[in-house]
Amino acid sequence: MDLDKNRIPDNVKKIHLIAICGTAMGALPCALKDIGFEVTGSDHKVYPPMSDFLAHKGIEASDGFDERNLAHRPDLVIVGNAVTKNNPEAEEMVRAGLHFCSMPQAVNRFLADGKKAIVITGTHGKTTASSILTWMLYEAGLDPSFMIGGILKNFNSNYRLGKGEVIVIEGDEYDTAFFDKGPKFLHYNPFMAALTSIEFDHADIFNDIEHIRNAFDKFISGISPSGRLFAFDGDKNVSELVTKKECWVLKYGMDASSTWRLGEVSVDPPRTVFKVLKEGKPFGTFKTKLMGEHNLLNALSVIAIANNMGITAEVIGRALETFQGIKRRQEIRGQKRGITVMDDFAHHPTAVRETIRAVKPFYPNGRLIAVFEPRTNSSMRRVFQNVYPLSFDHADIICIRTPSRLDKIPVNERFSSEKLVEDLKNRGKDAHHFSDTESIPDFLIKEARSGDVILIMSNGGFDNIHEKLLKLIGS
Figure 1 (tube, rainbow, N blue to C red):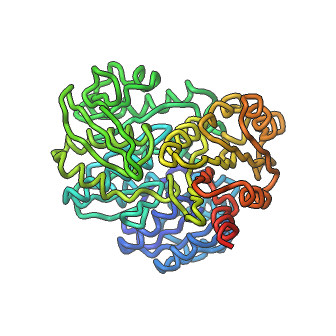
Figure 2 (cartoon, rainbow, N blue to C red):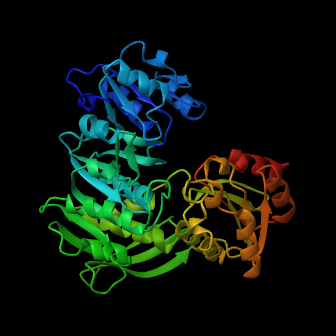
C-alpha cells in the first residue's frame, strides 16, 4: 500500500466517503457539502434516517460497496474506521492510486484548520459534555463549530460550521482506520481538553486497561504546555495519568482540593438543581433537565472550561436551563397511558448502572423497567459478564435480549444473556431473558402500568422497539 497517498492534496473538489452512514462519518459529508465540495459516498446499508438526511443535503449515497463507486475518480477518498483493507472500494482506491485519508484527518484539514480546538475525551460522557459546552459557547455569542457523535436537539444536528474561532470535537479513543490503528483523538491539537473517565472498553481493539491507559497517556502528553486539561478527580486512572504532565491540569469533581467542585444537589422533577464551587467558594446555583450525578459531573467539566474562556455564571446558567439534550441520551420517545418510554445509548456496565440510578428518582410513583440489548463489541464479549449483574440494582424489572450479532464473536469469548439473567435472579431481581426483540413488547404491554418508565438501552436501533412498544401501549 502506497502510504504516500495517505494525505490530502491541494485543490480538492470531489470527495468520496467509504462507510458514509456512521454516526460521525454521517456528519462529515454534510459539513463538506456545506463548505462547497462535491460529495459522494457508500455504505453497506443505506436507509432512513441517514439516507434521508444525506439526500436532503443533495449527497449521493450508494447502497453497497463497489469499485464502480470510484469510477468518477474523486480527488480524495475518506475511509471510515469500519472499512477493512479488503473492502472492494478500498482495494480500488489503492489500485487507482487515489489520495485517501481518515475521518479525523479530514476534520483537521477542512473543519478545524485555523480554529482553536476543544477536545472532550473519556470512556464516558464525551457526547453529553461536548454538547453542553457547544450550547454554552453558542449562548455566549461565540458562534462555535462542532463535530459530535450525537444529534444535539438545540441544533437538530451533530455538526455545525460556525464563524467563531472555536471548534468543539468529541475525541474518540477508538482506532482511526485500517491504515492507522491509533486512536482518533491523537490527530487533534487541543488548546483545551477534558478527560471525564478511563475504563476498559472496546475489547475488539484494546487488550486490557493498560492498553487503554497508554492511548490516553499519549493524548495527554501531546497537549502543549500552554494547553489546559480539565481532569475528573474521582477516577484513579485519570489521576495517575495527569500527574507531572507539561500541560496545565485543573481538576473537577467532588474532592475538596479540586479547583471545581460539585456542591449540594436536589431533584425537583423535571429538573435537577445543583451548586458549583470554584476554589472552595460558591460559583453558582444551576438548574438542568439532565438526570443523574454523572451528568452533573459532565456539566461541571464544561462549566470549568466555559468559565476559563471568560463566560459568566449567568450565561452558563441560561445555557444549562435551555439545553434540550441529545437524541438517544435519556430521550423520552413517548408517553402513552401514563407509561413513559425512554431511549438511552448506555451499553458499558458503568453507563448502564449510572443511567438507571439517574432516571429512578424522576419517576417516584412508578417502577423502572430496564430493557437492555448487549450490542457493542465489548458487551457481546464475556469480559463484563460478572460486572453487568451489579449494574441493574436500581431497576424494578429487567429485560435482557440475546445479542443479535453473536456470530461475529468467537465462541469462547461470547457473552451469555441467559447467565446474566440467572445472576440477576440470584441477586433477588425480577429479571427476564428474551431471544429476540419481538417478544419483548408483548411482555411489556402486559407488565407495565401507569407511572412506570421503560428505559430501553442499546447503542443500536434495537429493531425500532420504541415505536413498536408505544404503538402497542396506545392501542
